[in-house]
Image (cartoon, rainbow, N blue to C red):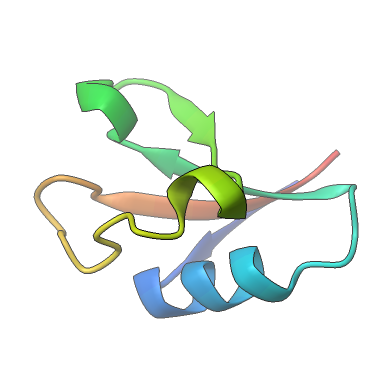
Length: 63
């Protein structure tokens, strides 16, 4: 199941997500505009979530 997220909501969920089954995913990570990449707070906390051109879409995935 995938749910589209706003950049702000994606950042909040990524920061405070206590569940391992929910993954915040980003399209455009490392210039990959075709696929989604899982974000990890420790690695991606300084990501520019507001960069709509760089990171056009965020989703919450339930695995």
